[in-house]
Image (cartoon, rainbow, N blue to C red):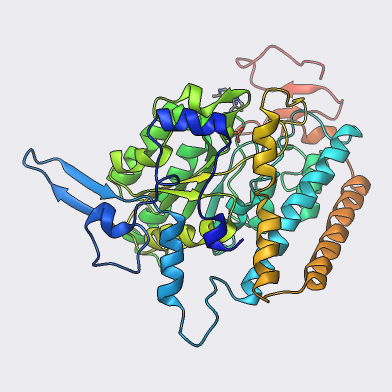
Length: 437
Ligand SMILES: Cc1ncc(C[n+]2csc(CCOP(=O)(O)OP(=O)(O)O)c2C)c(N)n1
Ligand SMILES: [Mg+2]
């Protein structure tokens, strides 16, 4: 994935024509930062915001979109003349590769296990979108928070939740990260500050905003040493939900340390983003709320990482939120119950050629950052990790019946399964008597 090669985002004809009707954004016609902004004073920043107060007193922010050319330019500027001109070190590249391989192999295994009846309910896989999770989450500290959607397994893995804990959760076992009570759409780990997958779309955005508010409150009111950042991941379809707009507003108003990461995979189940959204350039909604809006090629982990560095750094320095639109694609149906017959085969084939893992492999081998056999070694290691996770989940016990109502009520006293195996509620006003569960 040489940046220059992967730099221009090319859409299949149907997408191109629909997008051009909507005035294509920077991915098509790349605007250099200086040309776009007339702004050169912060060359080390990918997306400077220049605030002005207009004559009517309204704040306005001029924000540029990040294009692959900007990343390329940054690379050239930062590289010492003697060193090879690369965006990552060998160690960083290997870490990114391993994380993306883990995400892919884990999800492929989920598909197998689902069809073998080991999992229940809906299971939404992340294949194709790995560059977004890896590019962002691998830059975080343990104390930083991640909020995801129902497509959450890989975000949890990138954040450090073990493959065993995620697989067991999917199997509904007590060893799962939610003791088997959450399942596929609700990966949560207090230890890793993975604040959950959320099944209702848009539901996680206020939770993430609240987490970012907590960090700010700790730092500014409680005077704690806290520079934590929260990442909120969600899809293109979710950006038409009101909670998205409410949270963008609050995040700018309170200058919260949050990055809103939109994984624009062009589809919301079977609804095309282009058919359902008045302005499909989601990144533009950032400036409308006074924060930088950035568009990046979400199939290129190195570009995602460059943008993520800036956005996370900005949040950590107390400079406020950023909206990042990652243009990506899911390689499988919406969920494992979706036969995926709606999307155009040409579109799928197009994005298959831009597989982010293949691209990183190419970049690493072409730049002598790793040999084929080193990368194969990682793939083998990850296969073992995933096999082990399945074995572990399989052998783990199912929760006891008494666990059924735990964590359901805020105050569980008097609620639950009694020793007689019946549901009991000691508050007569709440329900009448006992009910058989
Ligand atoms: C509040 C709410 N309304 C509707 C749904 C049904 N639903 C589940 S996924 C989805 C589409 C979301 O698409 P997008 O945000 O693009 O995420 P993607 O699945 O592409 O990752 C919808 C409408 C829901 N889960 N929650
Ligand atoms: Mg989508």
